[in-house]
Length: 283
Image 1 (cartoon, helix red, strand yellow):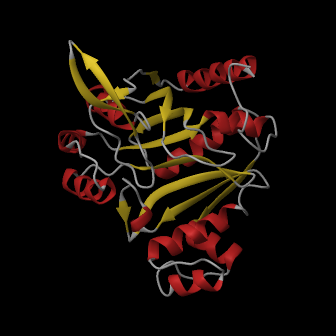
Image 2 (image 1 turned 90 degrees about the horizontal axis):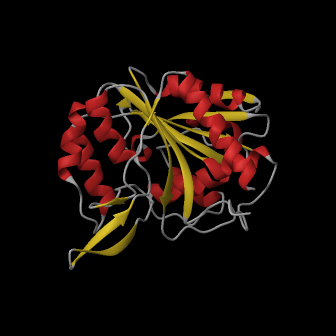
């Protein structure tokens, strides 16, 4: 698989450099953990000059890339190894390769178009884009993501006690219908599922792209208000320590949108594989 993986990396670089993106490189080991909803970082103990210190393997290069973006103010991309604890299932890895990029003076719909351009460049078919609420109605018969969602989830066999449990349980069911006629983007998420995206007209400017029922890419228009970002981070963080200086710095970001894409999943889909189990770029 090494030859195929290498060829794909070259194609990804070709696509982004041909569009004027600058490739960047950021640390894997960081003083603060990534603060992401539903993602668990991995801590490591390092010794520097005889002193022990707890540090963190990044779950994505997002914070470091945004620090660069503040100064560079140009389109950037990175192909990075990332680490996420407690991953489970045939399509998830503890360590994997992430393509992440940021486009200035752009929003989430611009990046949907760019992901589609990338997938066409690689030879995939495109189905189109649909608002998330419309997808819930089309595939699950649910006409509102707010009113009575817990009861609707229970009617479909999901043991939900909160809105979050209901939403993500239903979302897992929805995924099984997406992307079988080509890449399909779903967009406009509820604010409570918006991560760090900009919220407009009570909808998060966030999207995900699916192929054959598999999530391939996740992106959004970037929120840049430091107080709003810090408020969300504190909700997501639990017992993790929040890098307040980083979120303050985000107030200097240019208007932009960002996206991440799993490279192993992309390769898996390209070769019509159903699982990443046993997948190794050492082969």
